[in-house]
Image (cartoon, rainbow, N blue to C red; front, side, top):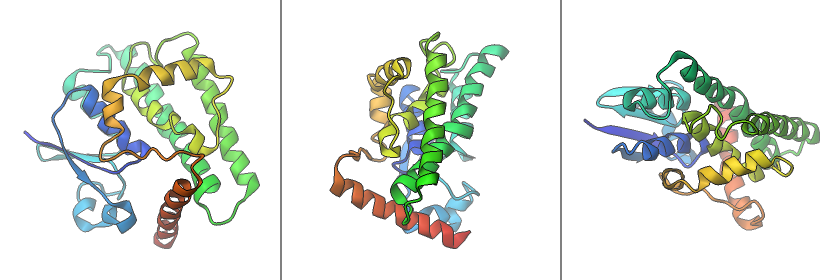
Length: 230
């Protein structure tokens, strides 16, 4: 049986590579070059109709959408998600929190703070403020629980892969001690460390002006490509 991960160096892509590493599942990697539009090729669209990374093919069975992939892998292995109904629900609730809140809001903060050709202060403030509010929700949950849903789970992997990039979105985590403790604890896990290097690391330091400029230019080109497709 062969499991193939189609991915790029993005938070959503890292969510799946972290999970695969944590679960010790053997897998092959196909790097999708977003700047070349490889996610829109007919071949890839047969795997992911939405033309987004990541996606997997497990012994011929395709799965797209990062949250759906995490649930699939957890159910396949019996790892990082409880078997009982309420425990499973708790994990899925916090996974959906990332899918519907943390990811979209941080994504929009990145677009307006880093990539959009025009600086629109109201839009930047709107999305950065919402990200900070969502971080506060995580911090309150983590004040009473080591991890988001009790034991370490796919919900932690999903949220961590985005939260760790907070500075790139222009959002600080100062004053959120429980979130900082949780973020640091996951960063020490070998599976998390390995997962964020697949297919390669995207550790662009926010304070590195030249590297940030080059990365932003590539991202801006993809934003413009998306506008033309819309």
